[in-house]
Length: 117
Image 1 (tube, rainbow, N blue to C red):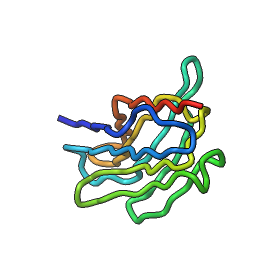
Image 2 (tube, rainbow, N blue to C red; image 1 turned 90 degrees about the vertical axis):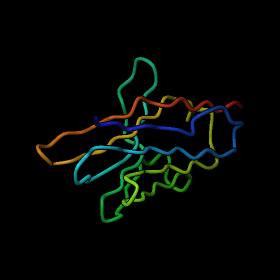
Image 3 (tube, rainbow, N blue to C red; image 1 turned 45 degrees about the vertical axis):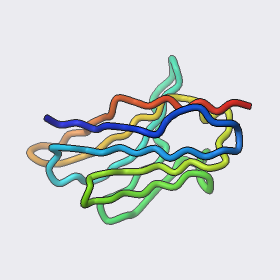
Image 4 (cartoon, one colour; image 1 turned 120 degrees about the vertical axis):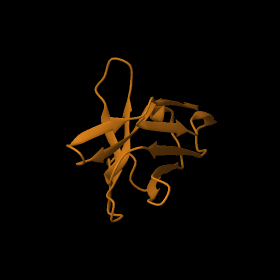
């Protein structure tokens, strides 16, 4: 059964750090992996993406503060979040994309990140 299991969210003070993890199972030949985030009543926005080859891109709002990485052997993607701000307080969702057997994006269940001022 396809699963993306996230961990690492929680409560942190402004300026602090958190590391999110997302482990994918039963997905064949994962391509891009990444993180989106969504505030209540708003659209889901891209935070960071990493290709299977390791190329990365980031939302302007997190450049220089967040770092995405992945372990292909473990089908796991990470998001190291430093210098957190109260406006980073939202639910974070990981995803994994595969073209096999057909193109599909799989999503994690979401993890809450709360940054107190």
